[in-house]
Amino acid sequence: MAQTTPPAPPEIFARHRRLAQRARMRRLATRPDAARFLADDMIEDMLDRLSFLRHAPQTALIIGDVDHSLGTALAAQGVAVTHADPAALPGETGVDQEAPLPFAQGFDFIAVLGTLDTVNDLPGALVHLRRALAPDGLAMVSFTAAGSLPALRSVMLAADADRPAPRVHPQVDVRAGGQLLQRAGFADPVIDSRSLAVRYRSLTRLVQDLRDQGLSNCLARPGAPLGKAALARAQEAFAAAADAEGRVTETFEILTLSGWAKPLRAPKF
Image 1: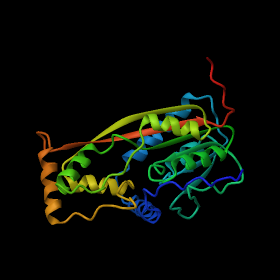
Image 2 (image 1 turned 30 degrees about the horizontal axis):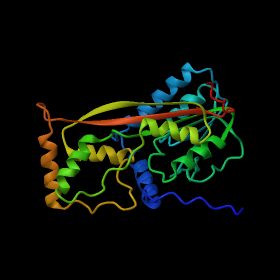
Image 3 (image 1 turned 90 degrees about the vertical axis):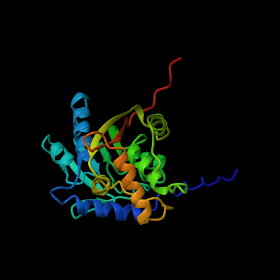
């Protein structure tokens, strides 16, 4: 029987826009006032998880560690760290996360920080991570997920009035995250999410924080830029949502997926 080639995943995100957005984020990250609260939270969470696990990696691959904070912490524990990024800087390895990772050896630990929420083939990206692990290796993946940016979604709907446009990315929830890990062949998967609430005085600052952290729109078919009238409606909607102190609370949901490179165990009935 002839084998059929599986269909290509739908193009939800534009690869060139994704890379340009990532490169811009890395440039903005050099500013002393650049927002980085999402990366800081992900790094702290991963280090906490490792401290509670009986897993002492000797080698680690870290993807998306913008200022190498996680790598520095692991290196201080004697871990040999390899840094990679879709928009690599000197001293890092460039990676296409929808293709096999360009490493000959397997890693005891792989961490991915905030780069997998905008790939078109997320199941394939997770399979590539699983294959890059050494036996008994552990992977942790964190990114913003379903439930994020409800205030911005509301503001953009008000801005677009009766002609809503795609402006906020589709996002993965906890249930889908578990299914993805299972499909990719990870053993003992753990999936959870947590919320970060950030208060803003202006829509401009919210948008700047999104750009600083690589969360602006990279959809393959984005909506048209906001005109003056639409921007005015957005500003009015933001002001209307403010509390007594003139601030709007925005929510960021961080999804963390972790799994092991171990033989899968048959379910017990």
